[in-house]
Length: 46
Image (cartoon, rainbow, N blue to C red; front, side, top):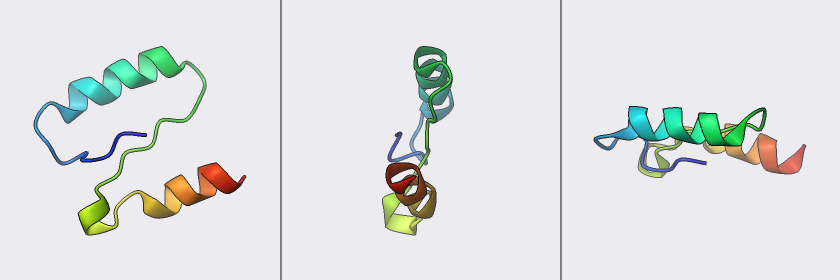
């Protein structure tokens, strides 16, 4: 989970998180815009 995906440096952070996470999902979100919230909900409830 990477909230505030609209901030500077987000691309590098996501790359690093994906490297660390391996096969696990890494979800980007911008809560103030509602972006990524449905994907997060789905990941948590599946």
